[in-house]
Length: 184
Image 1 (tube, rainbow, N blue to C red):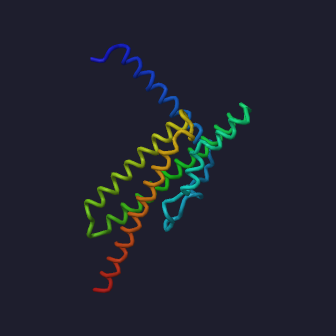
Image 2 (cartoon, helix red, strand yellow):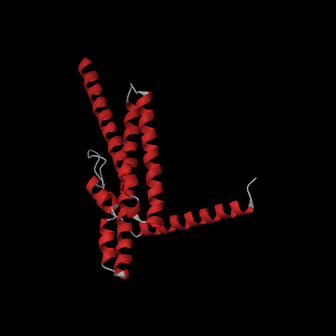
Image 3 (cartoon, rainbow, N blue to C red):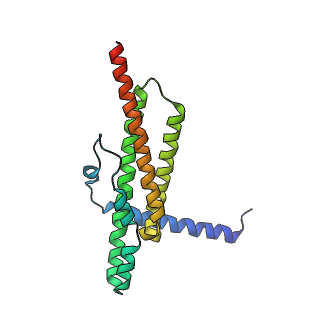
């Protein structure tokens, strides 16, 4: 049975997470609404934010430089803007990978030879990426992007890996379609 203090601590943690989620959501609502214009077209790679960009946005180097200037107002502004850019990057990654997975599902429905192991691997990587993006979205407001460098790089590598697997799948499906058309 859970003690009163444990339940109270759990409730406080849950309340803090809800408040952080609301703050991150309100920040993301103020982000540019032209997100779809920035996302890759159907033929482009999943890479929305290049790895160098992700590495820099989630790095602590710029914050260290700003902190050395000892100007609190500049540091607050920098952290607010950097968090907004990091949220935009996470949001773009989530939207792009969702779009790519939707395309993949449509292609899979038309495919006659689906490999269950590969589909399961793609789904697990997708679920892991969505989880990491959700956690990043929450933690950016709580901890700041500079403390999430490793997690952001992991999400970027996973998005790239999913994109590579799906491109292989699509090229294999196209090859199969061409072979079927030749034999007809």
